[in-house]
Image 1: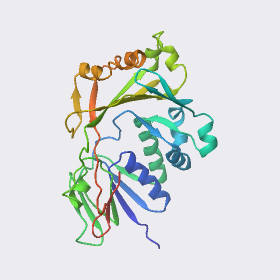
Image 2 (image 1 turned 135 degrees about the vertical axis):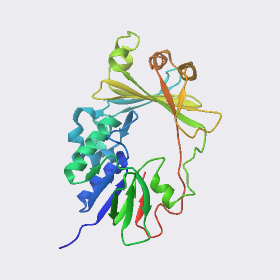
Image 3 (image 1 turned 30 degrees about the vertical axis):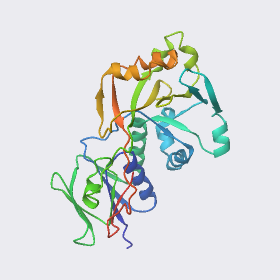
Image 4 (image 1 turned 90 degrees about the vertical axis):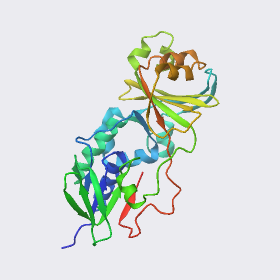
Length: 300
């Protein structure tokens, strides 16, 4: 009998689960090893542009997530003070011109949909399986050992284990993601119900839109997620130093950064109870993303 290629994936995040679905559908046997004791995803909103929406539709993930995939009506670009500088109609133009929607989704809902479809496709998702050792040179199989002593043998191992990747440290020990600049971002979610309760803000959120507010060294992008119940915000800013890890930030420092913005978006910024500063890190460019034997590879 023909034997299936057995592929191991280290990390059951968005990248790892997407890879698992694609590889199962291509005919491989896939085992995903996740360090956490339960599946989940941190963070807030993420954009599913048409090239990615195509995959969600073809895999059936879009149907699973349902209304939590939000299509927005228009994109408005503004200066910091609110002056309009650009406008794009999204519905129905994007679907008509590109064939697929531009969706907005909470990472949690995206992750849940990917996990359900990955399992349905046949992938084995193993939780509480933190990888501690990888040997890709001693045999025809890549040998993986977890923290509990469990051993696995794979024809190919895919490292999808994020910024603190164990796989990367094993095959490329000299490589570490680093911030190329002081550019960072805050991420926040505010319920639409709270925003609509303010008469001065109702006009701003009467439609499901993406709003981009731009200044010299900062910007705010806001858009709807979670079936249009929540407003997601990504708030870019520059630090005078390089930031290499997530940081707690005093709420007053956060609000001070956007004090000169349009009073409407500033009101929404002030509704955020707490935030963290997320660095923007880059890995590479590298000569290779795989082991010399080409049986271990990094993604993401």
